[in-house]
Length: 116
Image (cartoon, one colour):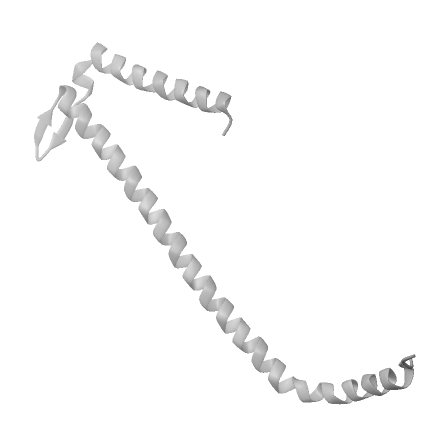
């Protein structure tokens, strides 16, 4: 990431945080969270709200990583199965190559150059 884009990202993040805090100062009752039937307003309510958003995002990230690991394991399993099938076919079909190898060997033997 270039320095200019990093600076723009930091400025945008700072503006968003300033806008959220300005909203809190202008409308303190807007930050109301209900926990066990009890209304929590003000800064603790905002803390609960941000904590819930942070927990949700972190859990979503962990689930994404877990799904990626599962898909990686499944793809490796399929790859191993296909490799076993390929090598089994190679072993069973290799006797069919003997006539081709004999003809190729004879042609190479006939056409080789004599060493000086």
